[in-house]
Every structure is written in C-alpha cells, then in structure tokens.
Image (cartoon, rainbow, N blue to C red; front, side):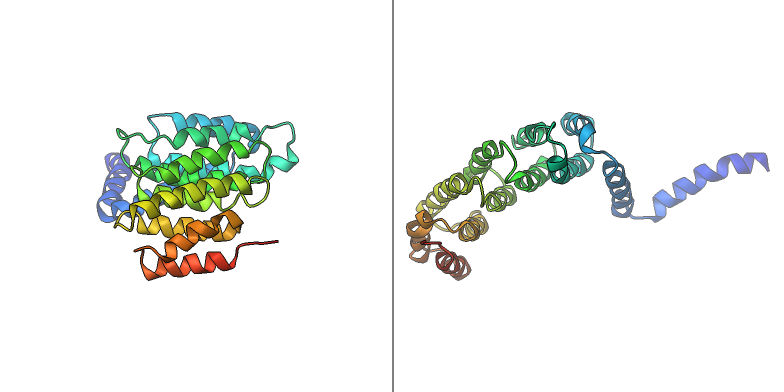
Length: 232
C-alpha cells in the first residue's frame, strides 16, 4: 500500500501529460507565469529586465515580462523618482533580431506593442527612431514591422512630428518598391497610422498610394487617412 501511495502521484502526473494536449499544458503554464508577473511592481522592474535578457528563459515567459513592462508605464506618474527609460530601454534592446533564437520575432512584436505604451512619457521621443527603423527594415518579419507601425501611431502628442516622419519615410520606401506579397499588410498599417497622426506632410505620400499598384483595401485606407489630415 505504501508503495502504491508513493508511486501514484508520479503515475498521475505521467497520465496527465499523456492525456492533455501539449498546447493546453503550455497555455496553463503561461497563464501561471502571467499571474506571477502581475505581482511585480514598478519598483522591481529590473527583475523583469533580467528575465528578458536571460538566454535560459522561454520566449513565452519573456513575452509576459515584456507585456508587464509595458503595463508598468501606467504607474510612472505616481513614481516621479523612476525614469521611464529604466522601463523602455530593455525593450529597445529586444528589437534587435536574434536569428539564433527560435521564435524571437514573437518577442519583438511584444516589445513594439509595449513601447507604444510609453508615448507621452518623458524621454519617449528616443523610442520613435528605433521603431521607425523596424518599420523600414525590409528584412524584418512583416508582423514585427506592422507592430512597430502601430506603436508609432500612439505618439500623437509630444512626438507626433517625429513619428510622422518615420512613417512617411517608410511609406515612400514601400510605394517606390511597389506592392508585393510581403509588404501589402505593413504598407496598409503605415497608411492607417499616418491617418491617426493626421500630419499634413503625409498628403503627397498618401496620394501616391492612390496611384500605385497596391490593393483596393490599401487605397481605401489611404483615402480615409487623407480625409483625417489636419490642415488647421
């Protein structure tokens, strides 16, 4: 009987591992990790930074750490003693592709999304150029470029002019290249982001989209963006 009691938990764990799909177990583990991340406050953000840079941590766990870092931006107004750069600098480091790390692009998408949450914070203008570089990088995965383009649209206050410049440069680059399977979605996102910023300097680049070989949906988005330009 004692032997059975000792062996039963191990046998049960093995049975659970066999019967439950791997995706289910991974999701449960990820949810558990997210719960742990939510307990980390802004005063201990350096622990999140360590986790993000640790090569032994799973990408899924790093993704949760990146998400939490973005969430902590909301606490900055209550902590004037903490520089926003303490939170967003580790995220900027994530934007550098690591071809040797499987699924690293997932982390780069998360970093772009998190960086967008720092728009309006002190020093946030230093985020704009790195995001623009990602949008223009034609070697980068399209979903990462799209996330960077979306993030730039959030800089509609203090850094709107700089964000518009980055997006306009990216749009001109893609229109010059023409529509291809790997740039239609990112070009559409750039157009939408420019519409959200409403910068009048986007007028000519957006007009170029209307006269390009990009799909109708992209052109429709360009028309909408043109109508949102603020001329006053």
